[in-house]
Image (cartoon, rainbow, N blue to C red; front, side, top):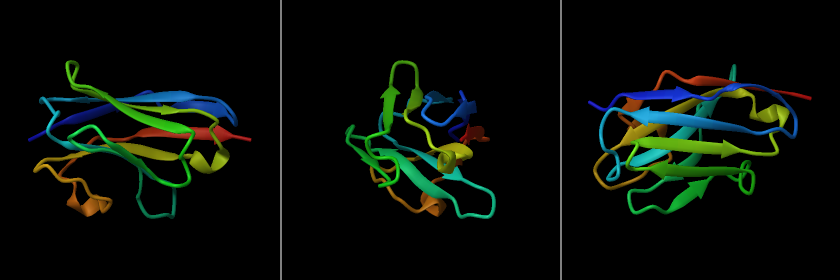
Length: 122
């Protein structure tokens, strides 16, 4: 069972930056790793995905502003968030799924962190 622990959330003003980290309890190079977010009253949405082969995919709302990366030696996934907007305010979750595939549906991920709050003020 993969355990994930996020950190790095906080409160920033619009235009600011944050870097989220997610430390995994196992070697995750063969996993699909992703960042999801959920704002109050809204569904959980995928923000950024890193496939086992290293390719990435982003939600249209964050393209050009967010960058997902991983350090396989440290078993750590990152999300660099730049040019933050108030609409980026949400709880951010790290997620993982094995098996060599990657999905946009959060129901198909079988490991989740506890979440880290990001608040962007205007």
